[in-house]
Structure formats: structure tokens, C-alpha cells
Length: 345
Image (cartoon, rainbow, N blue to C red; front, side):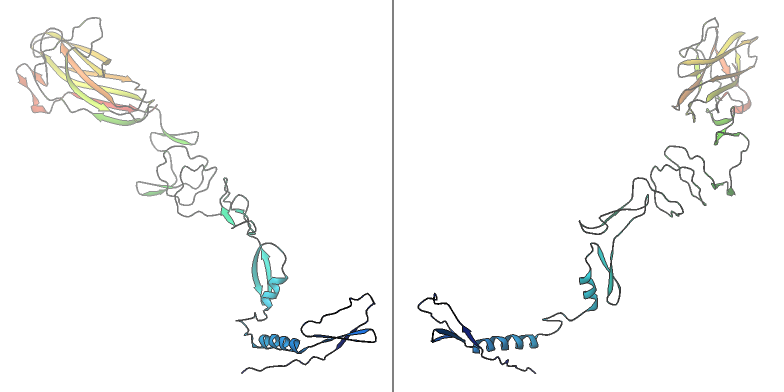
């Protein structure tokens, strides 16, 4: 339903008394009438047009729909309009609100432009983080530096490098048993590091046993020179990679030898082409059996693979292992052996 309203305006007369300097001729526009009597000019204004304008404005105001053409009164909007502070507006209750600013925590969260005035608020982690009283669960942490940390049932992987020092609460599983580390045989504690005790064997490797009885014809002269890697016959070899560059490698050779005649036999252990130990036996008669036992040590100085060999040769005649010139004895259960052990520094 629509209604129309008509505004009634009185028709006042505008009377002006003007000085004699007024122009000799006055022209009235639309809606204005001018009369003169006894030197007095009278201006009459026709208010009909004003009535039509006022009526149209009133009708339009009454016909406007609230929420469509005009905004209904709202207490929350009134509260917002009353605010003059910069920041993020938060509704705190019916007809009330407050300006807020996003803030961080020192050494934990850094906030840039927290009130949003200059742009979007930005949250980031500072270069140095402090997690006092915090619990970190899960995730991957690459190359962290941990100072005096306390761990609760940690699962530690294999670090690429670095040391974990001054820690409490560390437990690990060893052979199915959970508990703190204790020092057992061969272990020592040096400056909060668990190490192998000096002289402990930390690695060992054996060459394939030599069970042959083949005549070894290449000679090694018995004189006052060091046997070389081009003399005699190689009967044993292995390649060992040290665990620690400063460790010592202990090389042991054992084997039973004989000659067809009385002669001298020389055996040497080599690392590459370097002679690290030699021994000789004087075979007193044909096919008499004598056992070599040589032990030599050297420091590899690196963790690169080390090639260890044994070479044997008679002074003047052929040499036989595991029997004599007539053939092999004990069916191969007797053998020449080479064992390398790594000794902890």
C-alpha cells in the first residue's frame, strides 16, 4: 500500500525597500512577480512548484525499503562508526567492539604489520628460537645445534656429522635392552665420549686359507736386503678397510713349509709393495716340516682400503706348503693363513 502526502506552504510576500539606485527596469523570472507602488517594489513568489518538489521528496523517503534502499539502525555499526583507532576491529558483544593488533612473542614468533594498516599482517619465525617450556613432537630437523638439551624417550637416527654433548635423559636400545649406556669390556669414557679402550680389537678379516701343495719355484735370496714384492710367490691376499684412520693394523701369517732338500725359506708380509715384516726358516733336511709364524703391525694413516699379501720363496730350491715334495698331507685341513686385526688407538 502506498500513500501520498501533500505539503502546504504559505505564500509569503517578499517586500523589499530598495534605494533609488535600483535599475530603472526589473524583469521577473518564472514563479516571481514584481509590482511597484509609491516607490516600493513588491516581489511575489509562486510556491506551487516548491510544493510539488517537497511532495515528491517526502513520497520517495516513505517508499524506501529498509535493508534494501536504506540501512537499518544497528548498534554494532554505531560502535564501529564511533571508533577512531587504527587496527583490526573485533566484535566483543552486542553493540560493542574493540580495535586489536596481532602481536608475537620474543624469540618465538615475529609479527610484521600487526595492525594491518600498511598491508597484510605477516607471521614468521625469528632467526633464533627459544622453546623454553615447549614440547616439540615429530618433524624433521636438519643440522640442528642443541645446547644442553633434555630428551624424553628420544629415537636418534645416524647424524651426518657433529657431536651431541651435555645431554640428559638419553636412553637407547642395545640388544633388546632399554636403559642408560654403561661401559663394558673394551669401552672407556673420555671427555663424555664413549670410545673403545686403547688396544681393543675393533675389526678383523681373514684371507682365504692356502691349502695347496704346489711347488713354489720363485726364490727370495737370504741376504742383508729387505725382500721385495717382486721376489718369491704370493700365496695369500686380502683387502681390509680401516674403521679409524689412527688405528693400527696387526697382520699375522702362519704356515707349515718344507723343501726337497736342506735349504733356507723366507716369508714376507706386504702392504701394497711395502714390506712390513719378514722371517726365515732353515730347513735342516729334505721334506722336514717347519712352521712359520710372522706378526707385523703398521699404522694405515687413513680409512682407505689396504691390500695385504704374503710372499714365500726358497733360497735355492722349491718350497712346499701343507706337505712335502711327495704330496699334500692331512687332506687340506692344514692351511697357511693370514689374519688382519684393527687395534683401537
